[in-house]
Every structure is written in structure tokens, then in C-alpha cells.
Length: 393
Figure 1 (tube, rainbow, N blue to C red):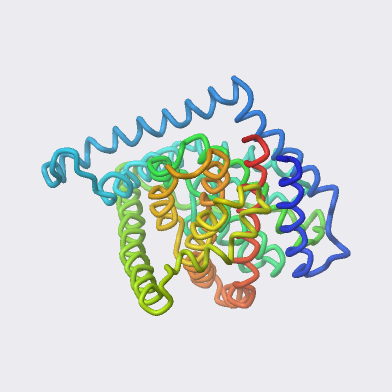
Figure 2: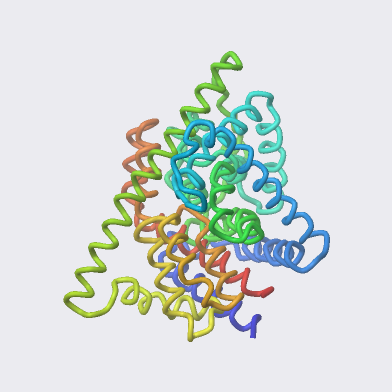
């Protein structure tokens, strides 16, 4: 049955992507099949072998320790604000992003992260057949996140064709940054977060190859990665702290607005239609959830979470998912968890378009024109990742 649902999920995605493709004749099917094979091998290795399970378990333990270390600073500044046994999402989930942002800044400063990104990008380019810039960006966005990652190719962005621009924007929306991994692991099982990070890199490129196929000339693929002026170490640390804190405040503000808005919509729906808004959108997404391999009895609940992520953001969806996950099967939990680990939502489209526009107004206008297709592509990439996860559960 798992194989059947793998086929139904992928056929659904490929069918939608094919319908909106910019150039159906230029789709590289061999390239897509290679990336799918790599994904299937990766998910089997991580979930069904002792080495893979040990590896992803250790990654989870590593981030758990980082969160505990981050908590020492949080406890010093905010200690005593909560009653014993109390929980604050802001303190426990968001504020550790400040510490992790500092670690990423240090790894960048000592050239460890750029080295890893560069050579992983070259390996990815060989596997996928995509351009070096696209492969570099797919890896770097998983490490740095957006909007910061766009600064690393600031000189290239004004020169990119609309097709290449679509591909890098899809990668930016489909991946998650290292800074977010620890926070997600407080709400989802770490093994699913780690698996999603790997799957999403390829899922975004698969979708880009269907919706947005193109060829590159050899000279067109030459890239020079933008290097920022090297700051004094402690200035870099200070800026990393502030960058991390800005992310915390932005995410917190978005949660305040979106959760309150969702509650207002629910009140209206319950008062007028006597059914919650999540249930309504759950029915709309239920067929998609079922095609991905989620049992039909749980498809409406899962579909509601999937739609909530699209309409609001992944944090809101993860919080809602935590409230109902104890009543769901292991298969549903695995598929939905992987689906949730990306930035594919309406709000992120605005962030991506704004980031590009701040570098090049012309390119920002291009992104605005294909914004809905960008959101569709990133969402379909999440469906691919979730579907492949269901193959091994």
C-alpha cells in the first residue's frame, strides 16, 4: 500500500505541476527520476538502517543540547517569570534562536559554513544536473535561511533570468534554516525534522524542473559568491545576536496576529455555520492528504493542519498539530510533520519578494508576478517530501 500511495501522491504533484509548467517539452524527466531515487534512498537510509537512525538521533540530541545551553542565557535574563512547571512558547521555542544565530555567525566567520556549503553545492550540482548557482543556493538556504541567504548572491540577482530567479525562490521557500531546526524540534519529533531538511532540498529542485525547466550555457553558470566585508569578531557576534533577536520578534509578532486572526475566523464560522474554519479547510485538503498516504479517517484533521500552514505559517500549524497529534497514527504524524517543515505560506511570498526587491526592483517585480505560482511550487514540494516520508512508515 505504501508504494501505491507513493505513486498517487507523486502523480498528483506531477499532474498539477505539469499543468502550470512554463515549457512542458523541456522537462528533464531523467533528472527528476535521479532526484527522486536519491530521496527514496535517503529516507530509507535515515529511517530504516541502524547507521541512519543513529545519525539522525545524534543530530536531534545535538540540537537538544544547544537548546539547553541557550536556556542558560534565557534563565539568567528571564528567570522567575514563570511558575514552576509553566511553559512559555516565546521563552522555550523562540528565544533560543538568538543563541543559534550566534553559532551560525561564528561558523560563517571562521569559514567553516561557507566551505561546507560550497562543496555540498558542487556535489548537489553533479547529482541534479542543475546549475552551480541553483545548487549552491539550495544548500545555503538550508543553512542560512531567508532573507539573509539572498545577500550571498547579491551581485548575481540583478543578472538572473526570470526562470533562474523562480528556482532560487522556490528553494528559499521550501528549505528551513539551521536557526529554525532547534525550535521545530521542540514541537515535532527531531527525526522527522532532520529528514525533512534533506528531502526538501531535492523536492524544491524537482518541482522547479517541472514548472520551470530550462538549460544553461557553460558560461552562464559561472558564479562568484558575494563575500561580505569581514567584521571584527565581537562586532560580528553582536550583529548575530541582533539578527537572531529580530527573527524572534518578527516570528512572535506574526504568531500574535495570525493566531488571533484564526480564532476570530473560527468564532465567525462557529457562530454562522456551526463548524470550525479548520474543519472546513480540512475537508478541502483531505483528498490531498489521502493521496499522500494518510488514512482517510484522519485525512480531514491532517488536511486542516496542512491548510493552516499554507494560510498562516508553520509555527501556527505545528502548535495546532501538537494539540491533536496524540490521537493520530504514526504514519499521519510522520507525513504531516515532514510536510510542515518548510516556509511555504502566503507570508513568506511577501518576505521573498521584498528581499529580492531590496536588491533589484526589476527582479522584485518579476517575483511579484509569479508569486502565486511560487507558492504553488513550494507547497507541491512539501507534498513530495511528505509523500516520500510515508513510504517508510
